[in-house]
Image 1 (spheres, rainbow, N blue to C red):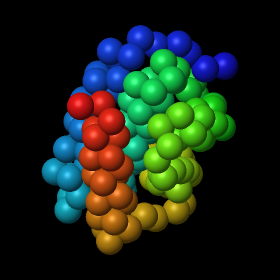
Image 2: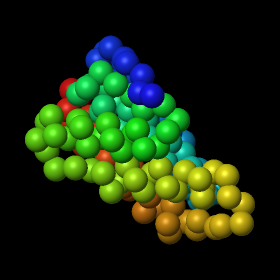
Image 3: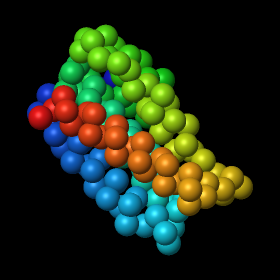
Image 4: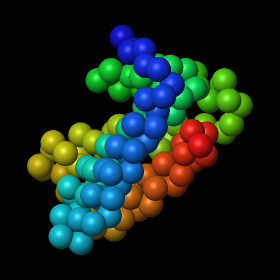
Length: 128
């Protein structure tokens, strides 16, 4: 079940997203998998910021809600969907944060951080 939020909270979620991104960048060399996990958190928080700003709604822990709300918000703004990056962030959250059998190396982490940064910039273009 989605949660209702006032539009103003979108800035707080965007700010949190940027903090996760900064943590990811600063830890890439020493802790690439943990950096990737923080990049996934940055993507998720940025998507929350986007859906709160456009719809006044945020997904709960159910990843399907995040995808549904992203699609709904995209329809409302008429922009091209960033759904692939949202899906990637949600999928990789499990691998980078909780699955110790799977490895997510530095190059993959670096690529994910770049995607997260572009997604955050895209979200910020709406919230400014």
